[in-house]
Image (tube, rainbow, N blue to C red; front, top):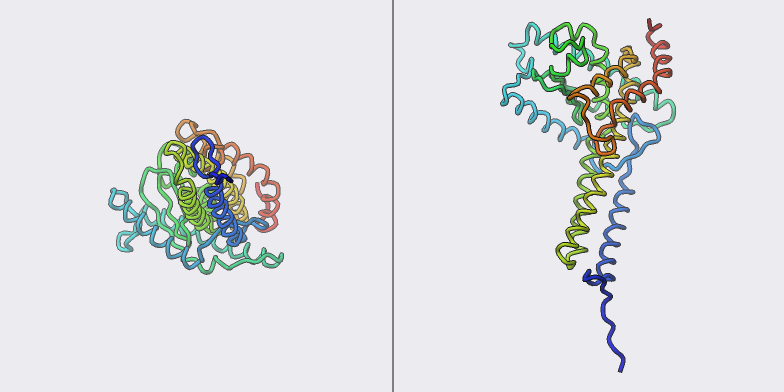
Length: 322
């Protein structure tokens, strides 16, 4: 009498064949989903990224997040300068106008760069004119600046000493020379132009789907082993996401530099700025491979590598640098 075949089991892991089939199908599905949503990265020729959001969706989400952040800052006692025109005077007006002037020049540079890429044969979606460019300064000691999807920019006064005369105080003297502030803003605007926010949201959503599919596939494992598999997936996903984020930062640095020279801001200020940024917190940072950002020394070195071309482009457009 022929014996019935039993499911192959190893170390109590359950039915390998059945589970493996579920996991394989899920992985194939995720791979197809990933590949079918690869989009060209605007302002980074030859680069592609996973992105499932439309520009209209980006702008909507960016606006919602921007309003929430500014309202939260206000509720924490950090004034959003010139949020009301009636109170926009003195130092508040000067700082806000400075940031908005830099932003306007970088916008024009982005439009020019977009057209330059088109003439070179690259497909450009025309995001510069679609974005709802908005600029505010937040009176907060936090050294921060950001540009959300859709062109929603905030600069915190806490970063102005780092981009200014670096004397430990924030005064109007810190915006007497705005070249380093333009470096920061160009970098943040570079993220938005390249749809990095949308790519991050899309990737996080896909990883969540993958985790759910994996959880179903290992559902009959012993609890400790199931937890180990899910943790391994989480660690691998986190490592990939960190590398993905560091690539975004490098892309934004290069896009920002391209904008900088077209807006006639001195590109030579960029390496020193990132060296200053590396000194924040006494220079204590996690190893680069464990961080979402490249090390400040790496970024400064990248700028030095890009500098000859940047200086040549600046001088071609704006005149000789001293």
